[in-house]
Length: 120
Image (tube, rainbow, N blue to C red):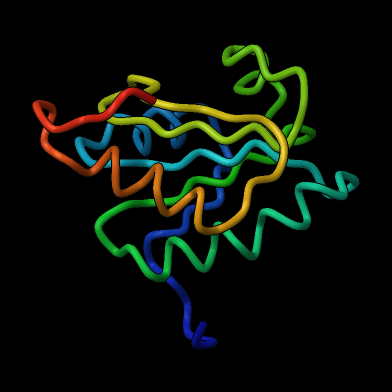
């Protein structure tokens, strides 16, 4: 991945910002993470790579220690917790780490027109 800043990666710093970001009408990946979380450190570079490869989506990173109220609203009990959202709706989620090819399959499935969606 090139060193330049990827514009579709957003570090969430407030509830208002989060609300604005997840209200977007395209696919948004929300990564709930913490600095002390080993599996989170595995997922962060993978999700950044995915965001770089898919400029049509956005990645919102939410540090649960700094933004506990957002994590509580989503009932995040384990991290990393990854939510795929469109227009404030959760369309898919998983907890823990996942290989890049599996994340790519999820994105491909969720970017299909509604009539073509496979079972999640």
